[in-house]
Length: 176
Image (cartoon, rainbow, N blue to C red; front, side):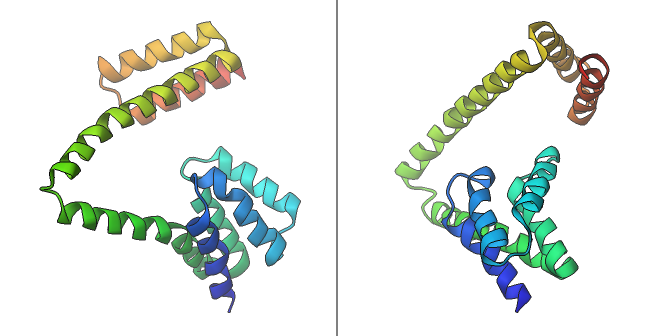
């Protein structure tokens, strides 16, 4: 019964929620804290804060942690599965539909518009990161980290993980 409850606690918010992980966190909290009482509000907030400090999508981290806390490894597997299955099913359905109509002129035109939209979204994300960097670290540090990262990536073809690690070390030494 606990596995079914875990499945429902994470499946329902992910199937009805819109906007990705941060947008469905209140729905997950309503299930985990309000409906099932597996955690208190303070513990949930602390788990969310820890999850936000780690890389990867927040919804899957929360599902894994809560599932493990409630029912061990099996609970973590069930909760993470319930979190990813709505997106997985929608993606498979959409890909099947696109593949079936891949020769359609409408599908080809639609596909041509995807790249510019993604490019604009990435540009906006870059701008927001740059603005946040200026607000938190200052213009000089932000430009210095950006320039060194660009040279490391483009000229020396450094692995992005090492560039991120270098920026973290710089931030810890000079900004911490």
